[in-house]
Length: 371
Image 1 (spheres, helix red, strand yellow):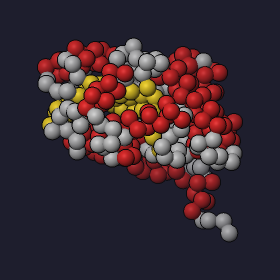
Image 2: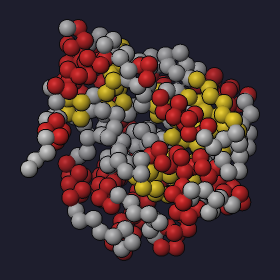
Image 3: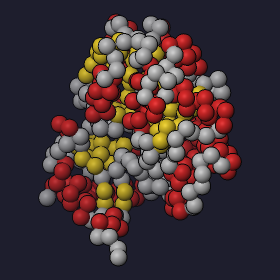
Image 4: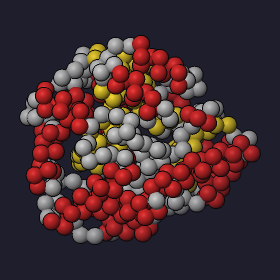
């Protein structure tokens, strides 16, 4: 007997939420393959291929590390904090929205002190303001959200921010969940120490896996502090690396079929061309914002330099009603989060989502808000 709960899912015509994203059908088909053992040679070879493609997308050199942890991307953030704060106590968070607040919450569970720098649009610090704060304050770890999907703010000067952090002898930890693949990111060149992302956004995958890149410097620090066996088993980054380097597998069972889809998604991106794929997000976002402006809609982030290429965020009073009306038509977009819940509409875009589909949705947003 078919479950009624899936009737609503089957009625979805257009998935335009910030994530999980619409996965191309040729990629999504991999989810139906048989879930083999994650300790088999077949799966070990697949994992190595996934790692190699991720290194290309995130620009992670061979001297640095890539770790897979089963679970949501938040698991990766928790794991990094659990390990790093075994050896240091003072943190700073540049808090640009809902997920910045989450970083404050997570870091506060491990650090001795956390400086919370509120940087919420539309009243936000510009690039110079953020760099000045990072230069002025005293901390040992800086936690930064690269692409804040709750507001559509991207820290496009993250390379400069990381440079300031490193000049103070501190570690840079980046929540890159929604930005990787949609924005340029050069992990090793920018000297980032920890980057956490997930497959379910611009990497064209399914939820269920946390991807963590770690610098050689941070790994040396964790070995020096001796975090192996001194943090919760599930968060033990040194254990994950030890097992992966010795055997090629993860110590716990990953979402096997999600790895299949991630492999196929990354293969599509690499075949398309990584630089070309990332560039396509910027071109598409610019065109969509132009179209929205033609319809009288206002972007939440006024300065294009800080405006995300992964999610279109528009000021819409009564956003909840607009989102609900669109859902009745089988079109899923997202309202704001927290205090912005009824003030903005967020439209997720992927490089392979047709522009026409987004334009039609904006036309509906414009019509519903004016009704």
